[in-house]
Image (cartoon, rainbow, N blue to C red):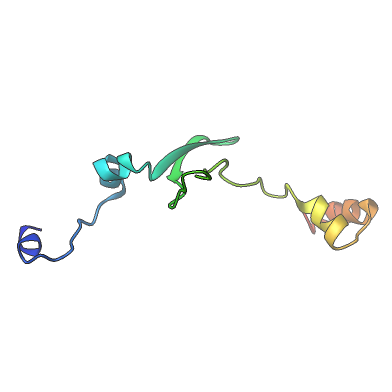
Length: 95
C-alpha cells in the first residue's frame, strides 16, 4: 500500500467481508444497512449506493416471499381463473 501511495497511484485494500463492515468510510457512507426479514430476522445488506438529497431512497425489504405474487400474475397477467390456479396448485405445478 505504501509503495502505491508513494507513487501517487489510486489504491485500496481488498477486504474480507468482516473487515469491510468495520471500515470507517463504509460506516460513514452507510453502505451497509440492516433490513428486517420475516423469516430470518434482521439482515445486514448493501444499502442504496447513490442517494439524492431530496429523494434518498432506502432498502425497505429483503424481497418478496416465494409465491407471494403467484395468484396475481396467473390471474391478472395470464388471465387464468381462480379455479385454474387452484388446480395447478393441486397438481404441484405452482406453489
